[in-house]
Amino acid sequence: MKIGISTFITDQGIRPAPLGTALEERAFDSLFIAEHSHIPVRRETPYPGGGELPEMYYRTLDPFVALSVIAAVTRRLLLGTGIALVPQRDPIHTAKEVASLDLVSDGRAVFGVGVGWNREEMRNHGADPATRGLLTDERLRAIRELWTSDEAEFHGRFVDFGPVFAWPKPVQRPHPPIYVGGGEGGFRRVAEFGDAWIANSDGPDDLGPRMERLREVAGRDVPVTVYAVRGGEEHLEGYRRLGVERVLLYLPTLPERESLEHLDRLAALADRFR
View (cartoon, one colour):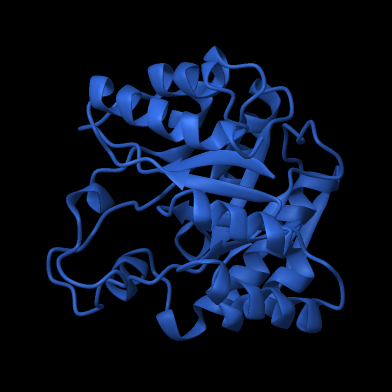
């Protein structure tokens, strides 16, 4: 079982370069970072975690800028979005950003995607929350076309362009892996686009039946990455028994010294399962 880190990189926490160096020194296999462009001050959408929305949600760095910095100081670490909010992103710009990250990292980009939860944030980007799933699917199809065709063209309900020249193309072929986040409502999206499923889980007992349901919907085994794991050795052993491909241990957003100390504790846990 592979073990990586998930976190929010913000202007208040450890900077990207020392974080990337520390992760590779401690033999973590990957880093997946969260994205929010902004958070509206007046918001009716409840925070999925309950209670007040943590400040880190509206202080995140742009994920592709942060991951590009980390690419420059690492050689092995996989660099993923966890997750990129596709309904809020122009597909042509996004295709270029992911392909550029894949190029500068020599093929280490992972495109983690999802539909998001904050309806007011989506609306500020011109996305209708009622159709965000359909919009996400169409933009993902358009992004794949931009990555894989020399003269890309796409005509849909929400996305319409072409033929166009769009470079760079990704280093990975046919394109960087797409990891799809979300619950059971997104399993058909996982089936169509997913090289893996990014699962939020309260523990192995919760995750096992959902993995079985995903296999039913997808008609195949889909690799599973579990996001923001806060549990200890017992949870990791349970995920290993389930055949989870990767666990992303959660790193709180902290200043550099505290982050490195926390990573030391997570690395000691990870060493028992590598």
